[in-house]
Image (cartoon, rainbow, N blue to C red; front, side):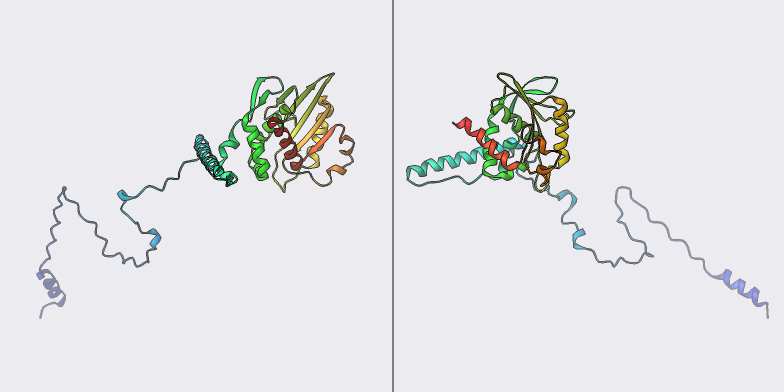
Length: 284
């Protein structure tokens, strides 16, 4: 008998050698579908319906477009829609009046009058060292005052600089000879300066606080204007707000001596009343 190890080596050499499989020829003009690796386990995770595409990428429909976008010119579109609607109400009122029935247009929703609230309410004049002189009030000033009289919440939709223009227009409408709208910065708390000339010259300053309730004007804001009165030379000062004043301001020992000879506090209710009175002068 031969060596067992030598016999085993001869058997291994006598086995047929497997030929390597020829690699498939790839045609560059054809696309080969991707095949997952055999060793990768199948993905059995549930797919959320929210992540499944509803259509092919080239079939995605654009989002729904609103009637108009809010840009710099959108208020013009809204204003035209509002005027057209009001004209329709007037025509309906005329037709129904001839039929001896009364038709009144509904109150103007705020969402339909953004253009009115954005319009210029004053006619500016020349610039001075203290600000811009006000020549007169524009027609939208009266329309906005009328709108606030019907719905006081409109007052809280106006910006602070728009309120400064409205207050400046109020002084011009009240008959002051010179009304100045101070710049947005560096005004030393004086938002409006008004001068009345007669036998002498009376200068008043106004600090406008466009606040929305429940935010109230604090005592420090009033004391700040008192400090300005001492250096400005004005005969009187006003603190005007669309909201109200803190409860203890009118009993503050540092503020009482100034009221009412040198200082007046105008809250939202008093402001609306005075504006309505000034607006009625034009109708009269």
